[in-house]
Structures are given as structure tokens and as C-alpha cells.
Image 1 (cartoon, helix red, strand yellow):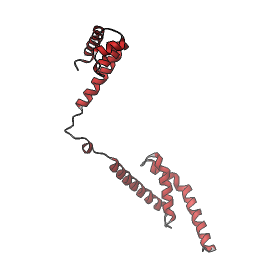
Image 2: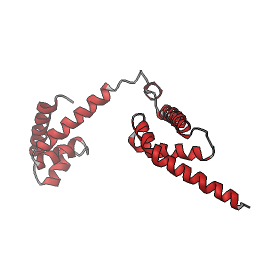
Image 3: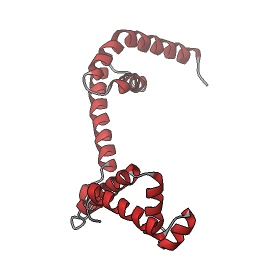
Image 4: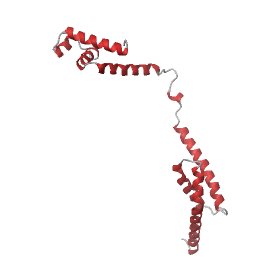
Length: 170
């Protein structure tokens, strides 16, 4: 249980810390602003004063200065460890034997093919896709569209000619 003398000593310590805070907090903030990200400045000022509460230094200003310098070092060490843990080496995830070029070329070819198909008339595009993608015969397509097989062949030939001009041989 606290005695009246203990309470008075605690009040006096709080008054001392409050006065010190008013005097030194702006200086500490400027110190931290030059060394850490702006978002972390107030947290480090607060931590500096939290650390002084457990001590009764003879020279509080010097104690805060040393504490601030230590906090910056500690902050940088923690940030470096955090960054090292988050770092993923290129070599760890990418095999040098895997060449990304074929993948990129295939993606580009697909993009060109898609663009070329979108330039076709809808009926021609649908007939081409039914033939080449869905594997339907000319007879099945002709029946679905109510046209002759020769008409389907002509539509597929038109589509193939257009795609080859735009994309090249597939």
C-alpha cells in the first residue's frame, strides 16, 4: 500500500516528466524526423519518455538523447530483420532452366489471335470457332446455320486467311 509520501513522490515525478516532455518532445521529434519515417516519429517520442519513467536519471536531457539514439538503432535493426524475412530471393523461386520467353510469346500470340478473331464478322467468327475449337464437322455447322457445306468451307477459309494475315501461321 502506498503511503502519502510515496504518492507525493510519484506526483512530483509526473510533474518533472511532464515539464521535461514539454521542453524536450519537440527536440526529440525533430531528431526522429531526420532519421525515421514520419509515421513512426510520435511513437518513438512516446517510447523515449516511457523509458525514462523507470529511471531517475541525474541528467534527464542526456538520458533522453541517449535513449533516442538507441531507439533509432533498435528501430533500424528491427526494420532490417523484418525486411530480410520478407525478402524472397529470385533464385529461390525461379529456376534458371525455365525460360520465360516461350510463355511470353504464347501469351502475345493469344492476344493477337483474340484481336484478329474479334475483327471478323460474328457469323464468320462463330463458324470458325465451331470448326476449329469445338471440332464440329462442316455438315454439322451447315445444318446449324441452315447453309451449304460449301458456304461453311468458304467462311472457315475467310477466317483462316484473316487470322494468318494478322497473326501468322499457328
